[in-house]
Image (tube, rainbow, N blue to C red; front, side, top):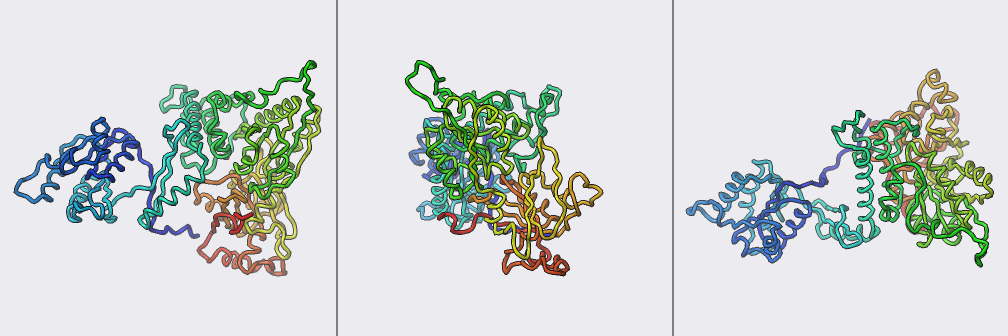
Length: 611
């Protein structure tokens, strides 16, 4: 088995919390002012040490010193022998400062070594300062001398909110010393492609996390009697997927269980809801979301603004209608013309599943309200009922409701339940087919679900049954491709069901077990720019997925010989008589050698950006 080989030349990119810590800057020019500003925004204390003190500092540092934001120390006032050279006195003074200061120093930035400066500190002096700091475990950045740097600064942008105030969201880009100016350009390109309200979205999600914790007294040492939730309930803790199953709500949960569930809902919202939707969340809407019950009532919503019909009104309202529409796998160019028309010309209200990406929702006119289903782990049934009730209510008011579902609405999209629900209440919905991700996803990953000589049939199933129950998976047939939707979060259980001996899986699998070397692929975010394809075998796919860290829902699992059918020169003879005798070697060659256990491919095929 072979894991990814580390490739040197990168940096470990971290974000530091510097409250109650000190950053020391040597030098008092514009670069020192820039470093000081960054440290102040990180809530660090800042001390500037330079020859000549405040009077020799640049205007910005003088201003900040006058306003109490930082302290400037004249290097000439620090202890040092008059008989020594200026460089030796510098070192003595800095060493005395480090020995006597009671400040908790985290970083020292030597900025007076900048190239081209007529008063540039010598390399020898910088080396001596670097050694002093290293002896005290203080990290150092030395301008324009990379080998005297323990860390470097990224090209950073901090996003603003609606009133011009700064938000918590920052992005940083580094080229690891290969082109600082280019890093700035890349950073600008990244920022320009993000919505302007992305910082507000971060603020509102932070507020949601705060309310989720405050409402449940989620602090360590809580005296509620329940176990305190661990890292699993926080969406940025390194947990690989926000779709990790939790039981359906039963009303008998402990405080800790409620905490875990609600923080998972926050993770789901962060993953699926559009940034625009997140940026506009009010505290009232957040509380409704966290309550997991009741209908969302937002101020100014379309439903609230349309009055009930009146016999005295001169406005004649036509009966409303409901359209169940498939949005395809995610790429806007894979929308059907009918779906595009429904979204852009017919909709008065769009009720969207959480998996529908921003690129699709962006097509909806700005005057049309969009609501996103709160189908989070453990809350799917309640959220489904809520969306159906909202659709009926809106249709009774004369609106055209577009119920937007990912992929095709009848392929594990609960369209059947909704058709019967709406029909019972007097509305016969129009079902608009969509391109199913079960077919499009493998195709976009270069995997044909059927292929002459490799796969003669296709079996499509779900990885989770109603209310989270296990499903019975099909047994192994060499000529069949198995596509499993909604199973990645339960991958370990799916693999066990497929591969374990029959006696242990009677209720989880019909038929014989799959060979451990059966080619297996996981496709995440199919058709989107961040599509990722993991190719491995049934034996190693769980370890392979774990090695990738954070997952990218939605995802699907493909099992069968179609996975390698079109790789390289192709494998379209696997159904020939006696071909199974060469399976092990076939898989080794496909993955790239006997030590290779998996392969990862990022992004969609070149050229799709033009479609």
